[in-house]
Image (cartoon, rainbow, N blue to C red; front, side, top):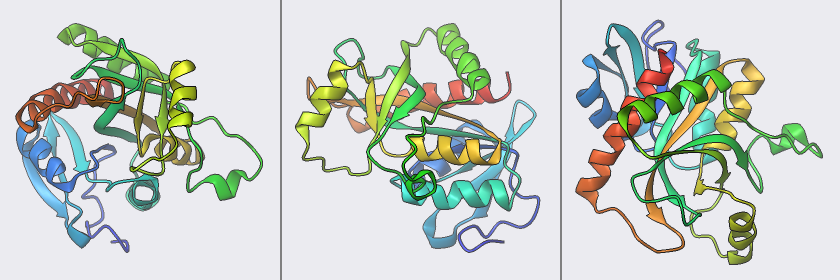
Length: 234
């Protein structure tokens, strides 16, 4: 057990999918895993371990924002032996050609700051995805007929952003979407020599101001989960 994860030794699989919302972790485990077992509920952050097509998988919440994800990613890797971590979550589109329900695979992440900034100091480290996972996820999305985009995303450290000038610059430079966790996940994975990927569903659009209603979010997130699972075990 760790400070934030109450799972017994061996209760966490080497492959971990990380939605931000703990209730979405429960929904995903009950929907996609065979025989899911609750392995963590410390501070309400739910984690479940089960199997998918015979492969052992843990689905564990990360909370919102990079500091929260950093806690769980570090403990999952350091104390429980996680080798593959895939963020599955929502994002806001920043390009006209990226539509609601589309899947975005984060090749790299633009940031202002991350919890790892204190380690890198003056170095502008570029957090990037594991190429094998990225390639497999792209193929899985195409097989499902899902609109998929791969490229640079923005991992923001604030939700209520009051810098529209920054958004304009990122839109101009082709940044696909904004979310709040992937850059730190990629940095931690690089530090520990494990695989990481962010598979994101577009739920909102910064340009058109469209947003998915709740029932459609669930259906769209199902496609994202399937893609992430297929990529993990390709």
